[in-house]
Structure formats: C-alpha cells, structure tokens
Image (tube, rainbow, N blue to C red):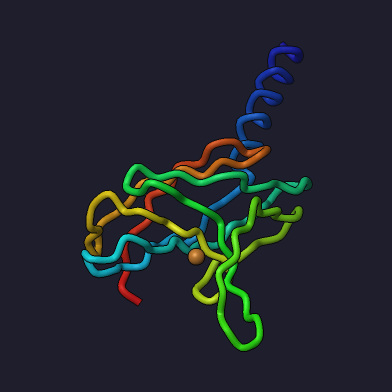
Length: 138
Ligand SMILES: [Cu+2]
C-alpha cells in the first residue's frame, strides 16, 4: 500500500510538473482586415525550481510565428527576432507592446475583435501548452 501511494504521488507530481508554466492574460491585437500581421502578448509565469525555455509558437491562422523584441537603435524602433525565450526559475516575463511579443505573420484570414484564437506554445520542459487568446482592440 505504501509503495502504491508513493507511485501515485510520483505520478501526480510528474503531471503537476507539466503545469509549472502558467500563461496569464494572453491577448492578440485586433488589426484591420487588410493587415497581414499582428502580435500576441501575455505573461509567462515559471513556478518551478528550474528555468524553462519557450522554443516556438504556432497557430493555424498564420503562416509564420516568431518571438520578437522591440528595441530602439539610434532613435528608431526596430523589431528583432529572438530565437528562444528563457524564463528563470520562480519568475515571470511580461510580453507587452513596445517590448517582447509574439509576432504573428501572414494571417490566412481576417481576425475579429472578441474572437478567441488557439495558439500552441512549446516549452523545453513544460512541453506543449495550448492557449486561447482573445482578439482585443487596444
Ligand atoms: Cu514583431
């Protein structure tokens, strides 16, 4: 009985490990139908003792998704491709306008305000996390 209990507990902890990454308040910027690009913003919370890495992001509504960072160079705002995003243990990273964001490029169809869009996030440790991000006009 003791063995069974420890197996069950181990199993539970393993499952819980996958949810050590929390995605808070995701939203996608509403854009006019003529626009082919938009961006996803959210806060990524790492509750675990280990760092995790956001490796890639995909969504069915766009041809390409990349992690971007907006930086200022000689007074000009530029967007730079970030290969992967490391979230240190017990910390959070905020993706927000004018800073880090998930660039959604080549929209296959127009997106509507209020619509929820399924996005898949792939983390090195936590694995695949599926979120539903509302389209918001801000
Ligand atoms: Cu961008």
